[in-house]
Image (cartoon, one colour):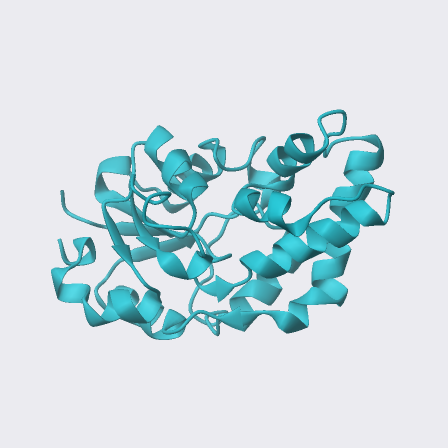
Length: 220
């Protein structure tokens, strides 16, 4: 395989945001009378709201009624309250610069809204480096379904056999596998090596991957 492109996850990968997202879901559900424990939400982070909501409250969905309101409230909380608690993962900007200098085509695959994406890229300090990304409007279903990864491939004009994905959650690995793409996983999202066992390689964070760049699948 001649590697030409990298599909990037952002939450938990370039930005330390997974705990923050879980807290936002807890608060959003509570606003509508649903008492959901952080410990129940946290293992689902990495999925989009269309997946999270019915797993936590089976009678709700993100498209209508209270489920839609919960989803909107979570987004509002990220934009107005929790965004200030986000931090870049160690080495995010430097890794992006290294991959770009190596001639790799980079595109973000995320089901975040465009407003959230703006915040995330700024927190990661890569908003001037990355111009291509997917958002929730580009796919019917979020990870672990492959829709958002396939949308990124299409936007970037990449083929699966010339592309790898960088992610932090088992849902990144499952989503990419369904699209025919291998994943380099990062532990900074808070998932265990066992949960990330489907990845082709695992590193601590972007800085760790950068330090081992020449020995990593990125150098293929």
